[in-house]
Length: 286
Image 1 (tube, one colour):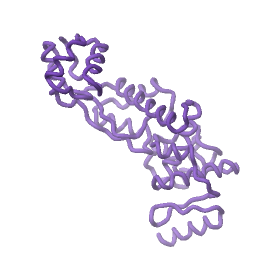
Image 2 (cartoon, one colour):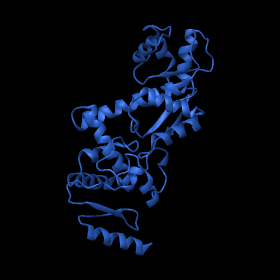
Image 3 (spheres, rainbow, N blue to C red):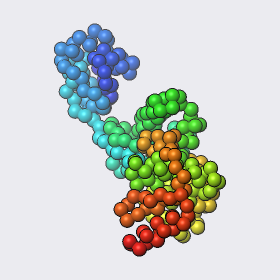
Image 4 (cartoon, helix red, strand yellow):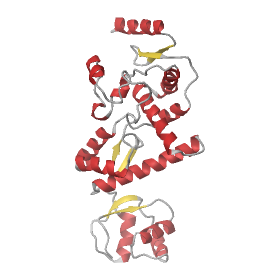
């Protein structure tokens, strides 16, 4: 039989594995599951076959002994797709421009379509297949989380939560702060105040750039919450489920401001005078 150099073996029973390989047009039958049980447990995930022509018995033996044909790459919560695609292109030796083109072809979501986690990426994968795998897995994870958290999945509503969650992700010092940052966002929106949050300007290629007054003045994108009211139309980054949960369930507070203190966490306040005191205290400590 003829096989690709790299194949994917799903998790599950031997019968399930044989059935899946049948669907992928491998020359296998249900009776082969008996022989496979005799050989041992199949590997799971992407495995390297090394040779592409072999007898069926050799193939079944190979999938129980073959080495992993994948490597891991981690998408950190708060990272932008632009930077993540750069990381993928360098680590997997893929073309960055083609990755960008495939991303735009396969999803209309400008940002926030990936779930931050550690991915096992098959070796010798091309740009098109990689983007497909990442997007399919992420969408499945998001739908499952939405069903578990909300009881339903509504695409439009979910994307609104993603946009809010992305601001929370960029602004929070830790997961415990997320519901508090979320409350500030909702409280400011309710009062018709601009969000005026630096993290919204850490979009795309600016993910790790420190935001200064000059950038705030000159950036005319819709991400600039110093110039425009409301939450940015698109997420600022890819967000974790802690941030999404905080966007759905903000803490109940009257906070309107927060300021990072000397310990690297935020002091929250309800009025501007207290906020100014927190700013001055931070300046003195510096």
